[in-house]
Length: 335
Length: 300
Image (cartoon, rainbow over all chains, first blue to last red; front, side, top):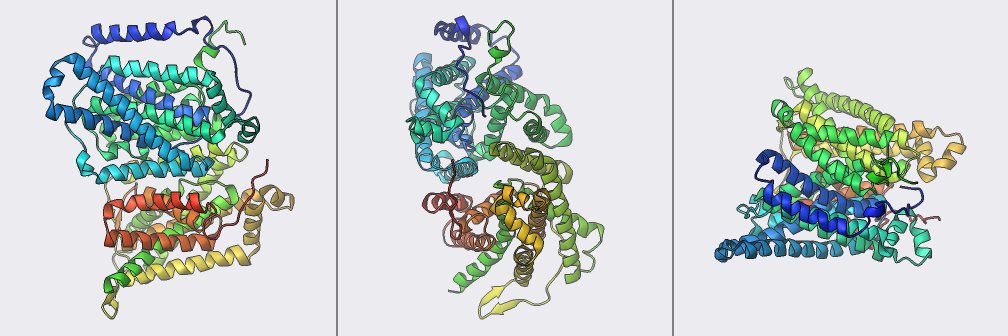
């Protein structure tokens, strides 16, 4: 967590906006031509990896870059998931003919995702404004509490199924949309932390008092980081809902928040590429452990996760990459 | 009115169990400034140690009060050892690390206990054996009191009194208070801070273990995830009473226990889990030091 802020031009000559656009087109080419070729089971793992990348990178903005340890990310994810699923199921129930035109269907879907993200933003603002006055452990437990409160509220709202959950969500998520939002998330977070705005986030992490003395509005910076994180969590929730086609409040309990935290901590708090690697690794690990889980009837994954977390804190507390990016480890990189 | 008093009694017995857990939270926070997330899971272990020891020693054949107390003591000893192990191997190496690392480790220990519990004990709920079957029903007027609730209350009061004695009337207790007041200064005064911290963990864990056995007596359904919610709620109780303050934790726990039973009794049981967190947020915003806490100024 400590150490000087690195102001290196990490991506070197690739550091232009073109690379993002090229990646975006590339993703859609894969989506259109290749997804039918891939084994659906593996494709599913890839898609969930994508969703987890969005969650981990957006949480990293709050926990890693701004240094505010939030434990309620699943709450924001559920807000986005319910909001967008509510919209698409409404259209499916009342205007099903709209979906026959793929263009309109997809626009409804993306619109619902963005709207879900915005509702989640609003929730993030409501949660963040009071709780970000708190520090460290208190902030952690209050965000955990807010996550649980959001879950209990959904448990009691009958319009979204209450404890029965929400079935029959149209399967609109696909490789293209999930990975477009992955690229968007990484792009926004990466560009943001290089901007003056993002520098103020980093300064809050490094030393709140010093940052305040230099004129940084620390509460403002925290709330902004929190709201942006909540937006992407909401979008990830929407993508998740339309991938699984069923959501219920239990899906978004604090164990899910912990799962995202483990990804961020494992990858390194303050490392975008670390979060990506950790999200992919842990999603794959979960599937790799599935045969073993069927024998023992227990979620072994969580035992391994938690053990990993303890060992990591004891031996390499900054996570795999610390605050560095994967490019920093490449040979030929000037320090 | 009868209903009202019934709820008060239920609330007190629920609150006294929260209190046993909350005391451990508040003590550990006092010496380490750490929210020991694993504390609720130590309480779960207490319930399971009680369950298995009652089975192995065949205490269920002849239920009696002595058996109950033996099981209780056994569970407390076992939980104290677990508390020691957790502190020694997970928290002590991080004494100099940033506090957030300690918090992450605590979350890790908590998850590890929960899910290894599922692996070892099985994830389906078990039924706590009847260690003591009361002969008579107590009742005041129309209000019925389950004698088990009285026993639980009495045992928890005895334990709290014992703890109060240790903390305020013994040398070890004085050392604990010194460490929680100022860690570095205490060590300069020749207090073996590591030993004191270990001891604090053991005392707190023993009480949580006792809470596990006692909860098994009143609500006999036990499972590996049972510690999560009571653990978090006990933390809320500790904050409510002013964290670091033992008497405050007890008051906070009783308040929370009663508030919960009233909510469930008069309104809706589904909001039960949200109440504690709403209370926590409210307290932290209005009076972050809790009811009996003292203000600590932050130094630059």
